[in-house]
Amino acid sequence: MSLIESLPARPLEPQELTSLNRADAFDLVVAVEDDGPARSLLFATDAWVKGVAYEDDAGWSVVETVALDDETERIDGLQACEEAVLSFRDDENEE
Image (cartoon, rainbow, N blue to C red):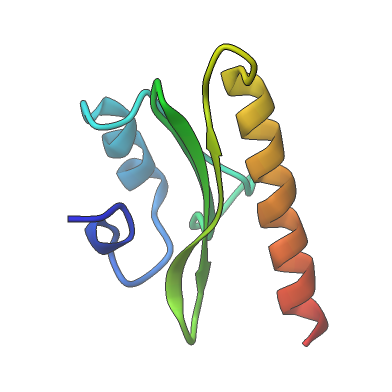
């Protein structure tokens, strides 16, 4: 099952985000938004960071993936994915 297929067909509630952080599959899961249901998420493992966004008409999609290696640290991957998600949100709001 892919990351996207494992998410419910709606934004995540704060308690669901907490549950994802307790799961063994991810090292870190954070919402890009400060409050309310999470429509933009950052997922991190030892190997990658993914920026994921929810749209009412299309559901969840992976906006950006950054592979982590000796030259790319997790913080760099998180920042790149957050920027990609915010850009995606800005593009979505312009339409």
